[in-house]
Length: 274
Image (cartoon, rainbow, N blue to C red; front, side):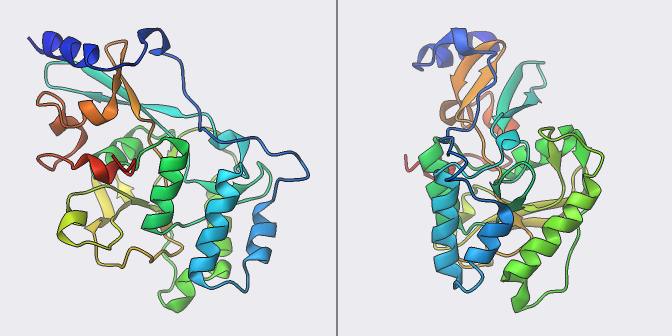
């Protein structure tokens, strides 16, 4: 019965089955060497910016393709139902960064900025359950590194220092593998309908199913600090070797509970503007 329901779901989409097992990548241009910018350069050029101006510059740099090449190949994360049906989603290996493979900065984004990047790259933000699964299946689980709270949490200096401490944990780890635990994710949740104009964050895991940060919508949507990160999710999933639109799968009666603990996610919060 379940397979029949999934088959009907797949037939309702316009995705080609021949692409089912091909790993997708991040839909961004490849800037020339003269156009590319390092993470250090980004921190220097935005050193005197206010928060909103820095966000605009970050969006511009990301969408022009100033992102490390190792972050462009997406990584599979698997989900399974009690009936042993398998679904695979594809996510960025790390939190979106600005710079080159040798010099980059994981740049925190506000909720509006994250949505703009998601729409422009044809990607989604994750649910809290997806964040848990990414952590559980990560090749490398990093230790959270909380820094002293205060207004400096939103400074370029904190962004740089936190990035350096993360890199110390990754000194012997190959680039491009799935890593998790080092930031709080910007997530989609129906709480954003209950508290409009907010950012939703979740994660920063000590261990599987043990995050520092439960789902929170405390902060204004323009807020971001060094502990926040944007991990993107591809809009196409793989179910038993066939491709399915994630927006149709996520709330399907047989699969919705696999991807979210909420009864049903409002599709518009996936950040495609749908």
